[in-house]
Each structure stands twice: as structure tokens, then as C-alpha cells.
Length: 146
Image (cartoon, rainbow, N blue to C red; front, top):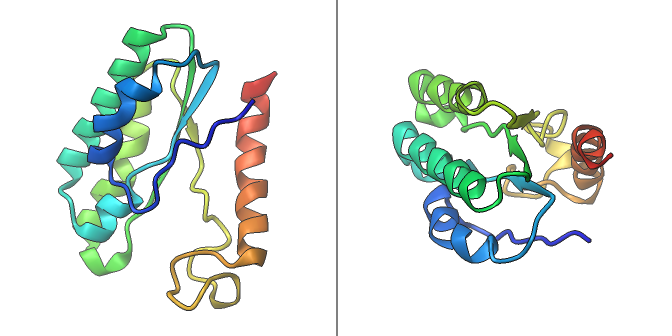
């Protein structure tokens, strides 16, 4: 059984506020995919990273046996190199600090920046792009479900 607990437009702060409620159900695998909207809004990398750490800590505390997968997110280049580099580095850093957390590669690999695979906003995948995203996710998620 898969539960999509995502909220469109949510930031890591929003997930942090909701995570305890989500943890009321028993989970085997939890995929944390947040941060993109932090990047779009220019939320400081340290704030996003701290939110993600608190989310991981709360999950581990509530359900120690759950498999946690953290999805690598990327910031758009308009925030500047320092921001985008720090943003990118935050995800593997969290995985290093939290043994057992699995890093899932960037969902939009092969889709981001490809005009024909995105909607008019240039950010959100179209139907063809979503197929690639689904393949990217499945490649990383399938081994965690065995």
C-alpha cells in the first residue's frame, strides 16, 4: 500500500509541521521528497537542512525500523552558484550524518531543463517527462521494497 502524503507547493517547514501526524500510521518505507519549493523561495539552505534533519530524527524516534529514503533535490541556477552548490550538498550531507538513510537521485534527471519534457512553466514535467520521473523513482525505490 502506498500513501502519497505530499502537498503541492509545500516546503520543508510544512512537512516538519505535519510529520508527527503522518507518523501515526505504521510505515515500512518513507520517501522524503521536499526542498524544491524551499529553493524556489530562496529559503536559506541551513534552514532547509535543519528542517530535514528534524524530520529524519522524528521519523527515527517514532518508528526506528522504518527505511528512510531522502530524494536529492536541486535549486534553480537563478539563486547563484553558492546557493545551488550548498543546496545540492545538503542532501548527501544528511545521508552521511544519518546512517541507514538512502539517497535517491534527483527525480528530474534527464527531464529538468528539457523544454519538450516540461510544461510551459519550464519547471514541472509534462506527461512524457513524468514517465521519465517515474522510471527514475522506480529504479531507486524498487530495491528498498524487497
